[in-house]
Image (cartoon, rainbow, N blue to C red; front, side):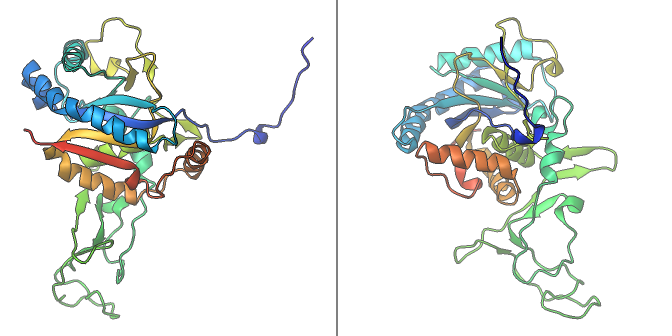
Length: 325
């Protein structure tokens, strides 16, 4: 007879861990207009991405603590800003062109799933975790990111007619123009002020850069809701793909033998036009207060595997930009 074992609920860890690969490699993120150009555009993309896959894998293998590289691939489809065609038409063509280039897509994600997944407002939950880094000399005149939807990587230029940055007077006085300044500048600044969303009072539309930041946090395994992982992969049953995007899981596992979706590090192979967007992604990551327990779990597990991870979440991401339309 099996003896019953009783345990207090508080004895169990509240934050669930997720399986982790060494690397999550994104081999594409295309817009509706890319798919409108048909198979030729997909073929062009994968032809550019293919030579980099082996190079990225070889580089990542150097940082596995001597273990065999666990790497999963993923592809993000933009169905958030434009609902085009249907999964039944798009996904088979996408997989066929990837296979033609000698590539395999382990996980397929919908960008709308980075905004809301399974009824959970994922993007809004990340927005509540934004913690602006006040640059030296800040006066608090500008409303916080939660009100404006704008996030900067340093000190903005003073607004004309506002209080001077170094003034102790409360009344408004004409400001002397002063250039913006990047907080972490190396002698010269590369200042960025990124729009994360717009809001008409009844509906909020998140920017591509903010949703891409959510995408990175998902791939790094750092997002939780009440301690549970969000956007869990759903294994594809091998059947036909649906006609409607809403009927396709936000994150679909295409390869049953794939390494875990989330990873210690991420790398994205993207056309060069994405560079400004991904700059904004890094600004968001640098100012996001991720779940402490999730971060601790990743840190402890990487230490057990002999893998050194940078403290900065943004530094756990990397990119390969290729020239193209």
